[in-house]
Image (tube, rainbow, N blue to C red):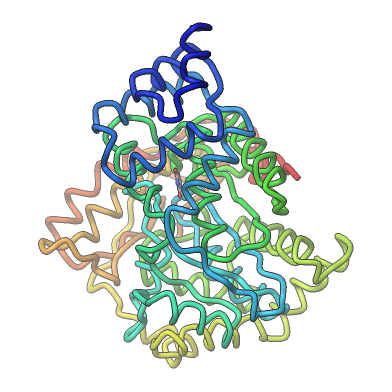
Length: 444
Ligand code: URA
């Protein structure tokens, strides 16, 4: 390898086979090599077989913080980088690696914007079974999520927040690489996730980033230790790119909050904006909100961050900001004033507990797949009215026959098909399980 390394130094564009071999054997890429790799993916010069081998070599041999920073930078520069220089407030986004029942992005965008932070919000990739924030908000009539980059900047200037679909001009090399990773089992690569998230968020105009790194059955990262490692990698790489970044490692083994579905989750988010809603969600909104306002410099201490978040929830300004965002994106705000306007499913039935005991575990991934079966219509679109509510969480004691969840449905066959996912998701046990932490670690 030493000879080859020397040879490659002389050669500005080393062969793809050499680059694969280099990473396979655990060596670090130079900045030029990383630029060459990204350019070759963008220009379709690198054959897919070699892209796949390279992604797998990176999966096994990792990348250093410096390599990952360079990768993030090159992926970002493969497309447009939004200039938010004319907006003078701090720009801090919250990004999640994706979890079942997570409606915090909608709430936090409005909450932080009400507190004077500009919150860039392009909705990126999630596990295919996780309903995206954009899909949830699309249950509001008129809500427009597909916008041009110019419209995105206008929304941020006017409202301070926006939740839109990822524009195709943002980090296009990452979009290509992500598609390749999906078909090569390399999604869970820590440097590739880091490069993917940072390139997009920085291209969207963020100065700082609060990352919710989820672990568990409801996330693509199943292992808690791996999530902690990802949190450390993202924060370290962001710092080396001169960006402020905090990550919370949070539990997505069971669904977050009381509901999973599209309109049902928007209704829950509206309740949160009124300072109501389930304890786990309120707790996560508070903690992530505090991180955003501190990172943005709107609050100087933990106490003032807590007071800032609580004040904007209590005085209704976060809710008003949410309505402003929905209105600016064409949605009907009377649905937010009166959530009863959201379509209701024709039928509601319970999933009865098969025996008495404590809810020991809930597999959030199976819950999500059940909801997906329940909601996906023949044409592939999602029925906004359906989903599940009143989720009995881990540690709850139930009697035989008591509801574990309430299933809202419009189609009998789809409901029947979803039942085994819901049944399989629940494990009941005679003893109360050990309490788990929603927020496992904070990495700053
Ligand atoms: N989310 C992203 O945006 N990219 C990844 O690689 C994984 C999760």
